[in-house]
Structures are given as C-alpha cells and as structure tokens.
Length: 221
Image (cartoon, rainbow, N blue to C red):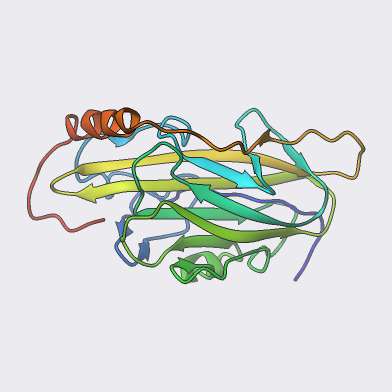
C-alpha cells in the first residue's frame, strides 16, 4: 500500500448508474446515482441529516461543518437509521488525493456488508456497500488511517427505495476528515442515543410516500 499522506471519502457516484438489489452499480464520484437511478421522484432527498441518518467514527457523529478531526489510528465506523425508516442500499467511499490506495483502510466483518466492491477496487478506493436489499437499521465497519493528513474525505450514500411502488429516495453526504496529533483536537458531536417517537417515523414515511412517481415494471431496491 502506497502512502504519501492519508484521506477518506464516502460518496455516491456516477451519472449513469443504478443501485441494484445486490450492490451499487459503480464507484464513480461524487454522485453514484444520476438519472438512471431516478426511476421515480423525488430522487435525491437531501443530506443524511435530512433523512435522519447518522454516521459515526469512534462514537463521534460526523458533521458537514468539517473537518472532523481524529488522531491517526483505527476506529469503528457506523451508519445507522437513527429516527429514519430503515434503509436498503448504501455506499461508503474512502479516498484521498494523497493516498494511492485506500482499499485496505476500510473494512467490515458484518455478513451483509461488502468491503471490496470490484468497481471501487479497480479505482484503488476503499468502500463498504450493500449485498442485498433487505431492510437495515445499521451497518458497521472499521476505518484505519496510520498517518497525519488534512485531506480525508468520507462520502456516504443511503438508498431508502428505488422501485415502481415507492419511487426513488436516496440521500448523500460528503464528509471531510482530518488526522492530527495536536492536543485538544476537535472531534465530531458525541453519539448520544436518539429517542424516536412512532409519530416521527410514520410522519417521514407518509411524506415520502406521498411524493413519489408510482410507475410499474421497474426493478430496483
């Protein structure tokens, strides 16, 4: 593995790709969806926060007001639904202009998580992705950066649905991370447990269901 400095990216990629039930259709950046994925409206529904999805590293919630700073090392990473409905598809993409190969820096031992997506491997990019379209509350993995760097990107995509009945609903966030040995380093927000009411979940479901294009004969998530 060729390190010059280290960085991370989790994004969604490709203007002509689709999320299949067995995995993402590509590892392009910065948007893996595009018109081919949008079988119905509303399509891109905003950031992960807009969908009530949460990404944590070492128990710290990542924010878009980065950089999110951590010391070099190995940490657990988690994507969870929070107060949102369950998700079906996802892609976490790790990359850096200063690291030639990040494929070994993002891994998972979870049975329903793929940590070696072929299209990402061809680009020497670390990734986590779905293996099926079963509903998911959370997925976990491990992110590892051994060197100090100020160029870390972690772009994360979540697919709630992509079918004729529910339409195409997905969210994307691009996080900036930084590794530093400085004392008093800033981290993301603490991952405090979120209390969710039934009304908050059902309300989101009603809003999404009421805004989709219900076309038939389309296979998706």
